Image (cartoon, rainbow, N blue to C red; front, top):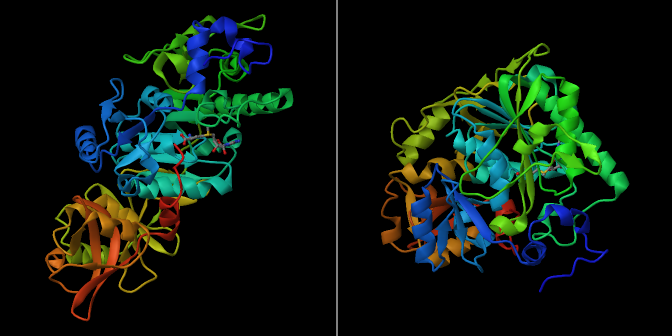
Length: 480
Ligand SMILES: C[S@@+](CC[C@H](N)C(=O)[O-])C[C@H]1O[C@@H](n2cnc3c(N)ncnc32)[C@H](O)[C@@H]1O
């Protein structure tokens, strides 16, 4: 049922911008459709759709996003085993738009200035196909854990994390080929996901607008000449959208320009060129507004900008992570029978004391700000024998030719809950090297690592699935 447009309606001030008020009002009262994208390092979209269909979940491909699908109502993807195996990422359809317009290319150096919980970072890193450099920056340390978990769960090898205020990001870390500013905002467009946590008052708005302007301005100084900056928010408020971009274009005095954006197969409306009596730069019509009722999504705003001048570019000052001895990796590869070339395009590094990491060989990491995370933690080196991490098992385990067990649905449930389970003799047939670490596979996809033993004539596996992920497996739904 739609709400009449009363004085108290939270979006009343946008009434003149909305082509069909009842459709808009009905859309924001409905739950969001479930949309996902396939992790191309593990499987393609058709394979993901077949896998879901076997479990009775219908899905439709999104015509404008090559890896993405919309799943049937009622599907809870955050509880599905494929989520924990990093087969897919849950992301609201409209939220896929900024990275589509950022248009990252393999080998590039990309900064995601406001990154947690990492959906768009993961999208960028995946489109880069494990090459190049993605620097994921996030101010709030309390949100770094969620960001790290996203990167590990998807087995991403080309990402480093930093934690600085985006508006003060060191210029020497640049230039980047592209910078994404997915700005903190009043979140009006997320009302379908979170009906109570939206909007802001005037004081809150002016704080946000000040941050947004400074971050966009910084992003344009961090990108190379000709490089691209995408500014995005999930709010409908023109003060945080077109007005921010107009202010920054003015400040850049011709050194940056707005590039008209279009997305075939996804309905948008042009950015505003006038708001609250203010005339804005006419080029803002080339920005995109996403209204919830046009594509059955949340609300979004995206502007694509390109930098022209490049006077204040000083960097990049690069960090050279210490190389790591390769014998531990070779031993793990031998144990699991990983094929020759399993880590082509990656270099082993030592970063932090606990793990040996694999990082994209062409990654160019900034020397400053300091890194909070770097590359894919691959081997836990504080334990003997060194343990292949769950993240590395997810990334490489499907290629292993020995020391893997294929489990059934009840065993997979136990593994994800970190409960021990028994194996039948036939399930242990690929473990001729004997007891020890094994890759645990379900439906042919690696879920993680277990510790297999022979006890009283039976095979028993202790789950080494990470505690933090296991706790998530019990929660009602994952953040999208
Ligand atoms: C819209 S969310 C980003 C969502 C993320 N890009 C994704 O797709 O998963 C904005 C993020 O910016 C962070 N943030 C807030 N102020 C910031 C600042 N000054 N510098 C950098 N990040 C900031 C917030 O903590 C929040 O995680």
